[in-house]
Amino acid sequence: MVADFPAAGQVFDYHYLWKWQADRGETEGRKKRPSCVVIVVTNAAGHHVMFIAPITSKAPDAGRVALEVPETEARRANLDTHLPLWVIVDELNADILETSYTLEERAARGSFSPAFTDAILRGVQRLRAGGRLNLSNRS
Image 1 (cartoon, rainbow, N blue to C red):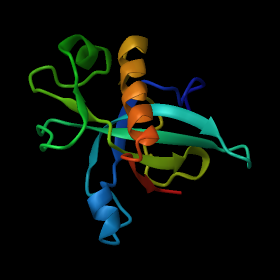
Image 2: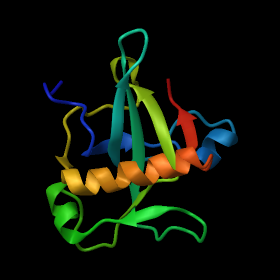
Image 3: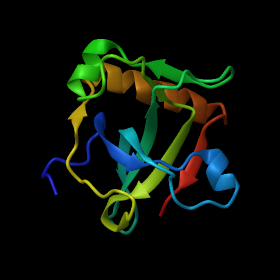
Image 4: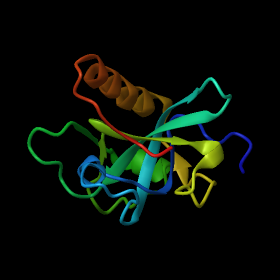
């Protein structure tokens, strides 16, 4: 494991489980997709709980909350710069680093800048405060 992993803003490939899939009883993400660590907290057992946002090239549906990824941020995170990309901020996966079976590659592909990472976190915090954040617990 990379010594500084995980950290907010890091992007890695992850089997993200969409909330609609979890609501159907699915427990596995259907495919690996670029995903961003929004924040990491330590739980009572001393484990690192990562809150992970998906990155998609599909334009978000009306009513979804997402941030478009600027080309400079896509380059920083080693993402495709030829496609429009969005970080979905109205739903997250919560996964425990030490016991995650879905996080196969522990090395980050890249990172967003602190300013863009803060914008993602502020969006998530606003949604959480308003009771509009969807969470799929992967632990």
